[in-house]
Image (cartoon, rainbow, N blue to C red; front, side):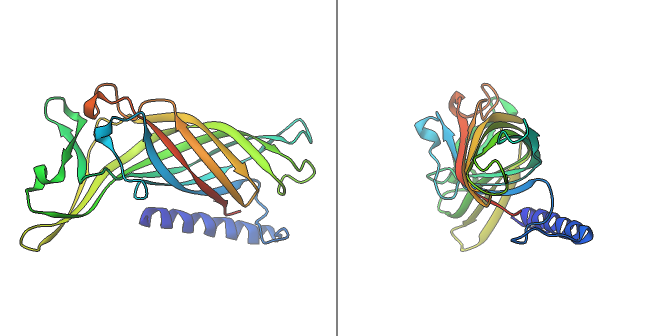
Length: 244
């Protein structure tokens, strides 16, 4: 979250300075910049997973920040092509105090799902148990604007896809042992995760507020490297606000 805050601050500062240099700001305070800066909030689910890989819904969250630039298609047809780039910051929270760790039978580029007590001993009290997955994403979408005379107003719907590269994955566990000592463990590993993700998504709403959904087309783990030989895929959905 600290990384996301710094990114947001740097982006907003640079765009604010650019708008000041241009000396013009449209009605409503929107900087005169061709493009959209989206901030997505949502939930991260694993589709087609085995029952043993149950996750907790609310702690399994997603935050995306994307900048997309429009390219107008066919004059006032209402259609634009909007490529972009940004960050996808996902979290997973496995149920029943379970976490991912390397499978010793498969090597360092693999994972198995185990009880935290099996790693750090019995009698502990788990306070936090999450997994972070951070991607650099490239979204590509075709967008239809119902208001053909002003693309910055009115209903619009977008269909497209995105491809992402995983640049960091780690688990965070906080627990208190039998002596009352609190420990925080961060474990950065490969976990057998697929380093590339790609899928389709949609975004529907108004310029300032949208709902969105993403369905991954490739498997979350490399073939045969995840727990239980799973072939699970990602499914994300949530709401989106346009910062400008």
